[in-house]
Image (cartoon, rainbow, N blue to C red; front, side, top):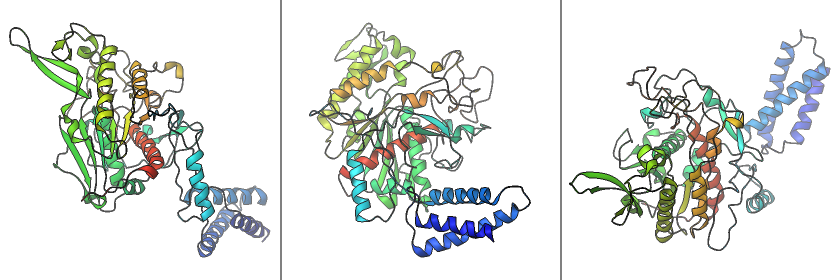
Length: 474
């Protein structure tokens, strides 16, 4: 009986002094929970009766597990963004205030709500993009093989990847925590709105991840569908997933350079490709008035033709005989920035720019035998990581001169660690595995690394949602 008195004493103390990370339960709920935990503790003690552990140690261990369970059960929300996210406007050069984790009960007192609002206003100490990957056995945002809206090229589970260790890592900032992605809450924030991804196939990677994560929160998954009925999204064009019950859409528009790809004829009438550095891509008319736009560009600027820049870059009627890629990229981004400033109404539209996503080709590039299929764990020694991409330095300088606030999702470093998360040889089932096959060490398996990008997007939206205009769409 001494065992039970000790347990009851511990439980009584626990019920009177709830953990700071748990929400108050009703008296009835508390009693039911404590009785259940008491019965569990009796079973644990009974099972341990043959051991040499002392009563004090057993009681302490059980109490510890009770606290862990209670903390796990408690609902919470947190808000986070980064002081490296450049959210600059014409009035100041301050960066987006960052927010560290705060736990919020579903039902709050007035004081709790006031404290919560005060934290939203004042917290500015956390950079959510500065952190590390940690092992975490919590469930992924959606189970491998469960989402039908993933392109075959990203579906590593379907394509036979035998390991799943890469799914166990979660991103953890050094100075705070980030909230678990809540698809229902995000859909409520997006009710009646339109979110558009504009960019290359790495943005398509993120787009499909978000669609699948939001879909997972729905009881009736038939209420989400792509308007054209297409199942593959690699070609040029516009794609839109409708979440019927929330009257919102999550769209993707392919625009790998953001500026316009073009064709001209040479002296003998032979056509050749050029890139109009002074002209935004024509599809911009399809998204300028969206509620949230997430841009990116980067990987296509590393391709051979783009990188060499010989008779390729065009302004007006002039085609440069040769232009350095850094100068061409700067011109293109300034064209994009000027278009955003002139056409996007920042009073109704939030603009994001997602940073460069790291590749991990070893012993060659994508077309010269580069590989990553042997990688099963993230990089832990930063000496093996790449230098900060030149493209991001240019991007940051361009954003700093814009009058439109831009939320900079700086995912470059967090992706550089993840050499283990690429499709590699598990690209598509119909592609035979062979020693010389082209590997994919640029894109990411889904589920996988882009889910964490969307978790950071969600955290940032939790902050800005207070100021997001309310708009109904029929």
